Amino acid sequence: MRERGWSYGDVARRSGLPRSTVHHLATTPIQRAPRPSRLEALAAALELPLSVLQAAVAEATGLSRGTVGVEPDTAVIVAGLADLSPDDRRHVAALVESLRAASARRVTPPTER
Image 1: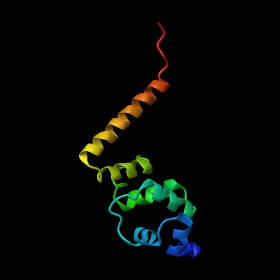
Image 2: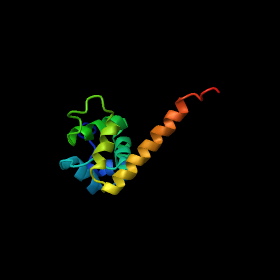
Image 3: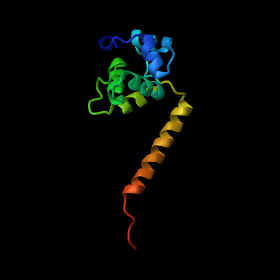
Image 4: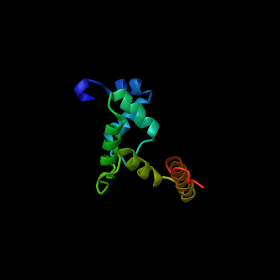
């Protein structure tokens, strides 16, 4: 922001986020990853690739330590899981398993009889 001479208000207008949200994200230690929609809005407003912002969030939340080779979006998702209830985490796990099974079916050729 500084390099481009943008204020928190400028970024807020460009992102569609409240100025208070932009200020909070820029000035306070990040305890958990912001919602993906906020990251996408900020990346667009800052004219940065989403992966760059995701990597910065992962670093700021301490997720990049010990997660070598993990995609930034995966680290953000994992960080968000901690905020969910046990029941919601079970739903997420079931969804992931369902998506993995569907993906495996798409890439596995049908067996010939």
